[in-house]
Image (cartoon, rainbow, N blue to C red):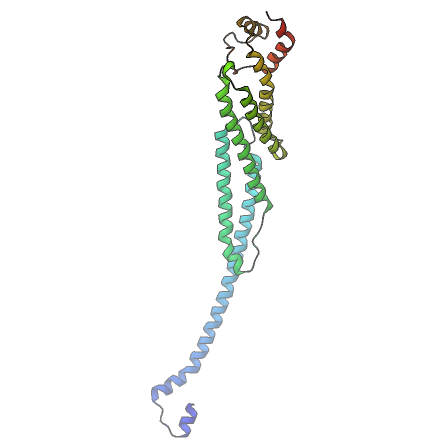
Length: 255
């Protein structure tokens, strides 16, 4: 354009001539800047991907380590109290939430590089085991509360039918959980408690018999070497197997 203006003797302002002379070097400088920026961007992307892969690896290790810790420390022992067990479960669930939060933070980077979000079976298994542990300990807690309401009650005031129904419901729930946690000590202990309790029901019915006199109760305590202070009106401290056997084989001779 400027060449055409010169051809027709059109005067061009000197400042425009200066700008024209500076345009080509400026364009080259601009292209150089774009090239440097592209190199910097490429380098940043490499570093970003490297950091992402490193964080992804750390995330995967966190999942595996959490799984290993859960397998070792999950509350399966009957030596624990429900409160102690729930505290462990709560702590692990909080750590599972932290794992999911870390995975969420990685998602933006994964989307940028079109990388798939990792799915870990170990994390699902951990959640499943914690839920099973929570369920069995809820049953332990609730059964303990129910039994505590009965164990000091008088035989003649106990609702045996209700007790059998409640115990049967607990036994059914525990049995269902056994498909997954049968090897857990707390499951075995809970199943044993419920079985022995249900086996005690006929014994309690016998002890509720109006024909059962104080001398009969005293004779049972002497024969079975029970504590003299054991009240005939309480289910607490009953040694069901020994008492049931005594009533079955010798109860009819108590006079």
